[in-house]
Image (cartoon, rainbow, N blue to C red):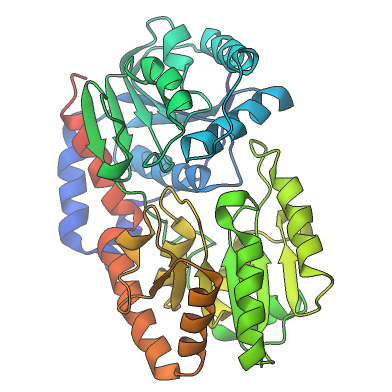
Length: 410
């Protein structure tokens, strides 16, 4: 059996003051004819990344408006997740391909999980590459199948993508963050739906400056000195070493600055520990570089505190499906310096809601510009929060999914 994920409750009414009555009423109207429809989400892990954070918010909200929605996680051992992490990197542009033997591992675990599917569903939504072969091995458990892509497919390793494409074409619809991610030759219905953050979750709810400061102090941060923070997994596309390079350039001009690299270790990311240790070594024992993860008691509230306390939030990604950590920082009125890749430019309008950069030198320059000009920092932060409010909060995502379901034969 796939593993059910336990979920709390959410009420759409609680979001009215943030997104407006008009959107809430539209959602209820779209949900009314879908009452009781059975929808299953399938993903690779229940924690440690943007996909799980989205599902923890959106599934309870779908239930609140009357749909019968569930979320289950596939089963897999390290050999499977080693292959799927390689596949993830390859689909985002890594040169390393996947051997026939590795494809066999991928297909075997997907077939095993497909056989454990039960019940009848109106829609099954499969998230990301790890369970993408589920549809091929499943019996008729659903009237409609959707593959939801959360990664950057704009410059993929073509050999890997071409091997995956027959599996993706089996789906009735595929959903992407951006038009640029849609592979050439994709058949069937294609939907563009950017992701969103939950503004009422512990990670994004309002923290007082005193509470944020107190939490940061517990991890050795001097809250009287400037703080740069990046929140992300530890991996090649997040470029933590590049963040350290940028920090060291900033410190040449501003010796009092500090850096916090805050990440979470996920079950479907075996290379995360390797990059965590590489980053730790690269920091070379610098007392002003804090490298923390969820095994150091860094949970949602702690991430919230680090982002809220930061004078600059950096996201120096080299590839990025969307960058929900950028959305989180914008929502917290923080000035953002981020890589000009993937979905980040949808959020960061250069010079208006933050700065887009492509090198450690650029990152250092924009960071110093913000740290030296508190009024600029406030201006960027206010504009960023408004953009997040308008476009990237969970109720908008709920409306978009209801629009997709409403157009299907359910």
